[in-house]
Image (cartoon, rainbow, N blue to C red):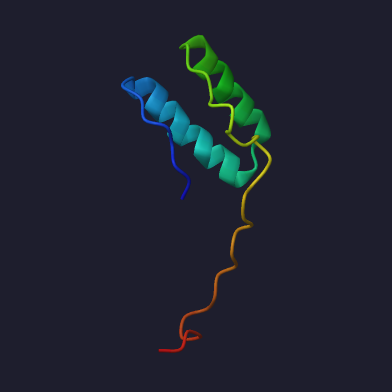
Length: 70
């Protein structure tokens, strides 16, 4: 899970959580809409934040139950 910057504004915090969900699903148009709402509320993303379409690691595939060894 990625770290979301701390904020005192509950609306900004909710928008940041919503944005993370859209980033993880690759919904770039929705990310842009959330970014616009964040800008309207005076929030600026840190300079080291990744772009909406990039991921540090690729998602892992699921394994069927019983395939894990104890």
